[in-house]
Length: 177
Image (cartoon, rainbow, N blue to C red; front, side):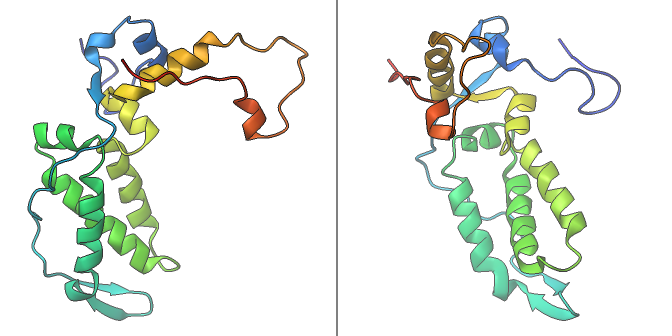
């Protein structure tokens, strides 16, 4: 059933705890920890030109190798099968191109590129918010949540942890079955 209002991203966010309670577990897609298959062929034209920094021109030859490196790395992540199912290869390639341009233009007028990069990260499930919005969850993530929930919550007035290591002291992570 559709949620939210008349605009994209309106309405309540999916409840991450509902997955653990098995309330709407069937609506969520479980992703593998990593994708072991080859990346698809690069779908975009290799040739482009962009002005960076102080009017310097850059061509695709300067950046295409970096785009392909991002492309290959992204296709090893657990979101990859969902991108194939949803036919998002071009969106992933555009994300790689935008990421490469952001790297090249840091320190200059890159605010619009950063905004586009953040939006693309969410659309592709590369951020925590994007995973929740797409209702994607890594298969091993449920085991971590369950193991953390088994530890009793700290009582009021209990000593606060001094560092991150102390925060997770006593939390056990169980291996998958």
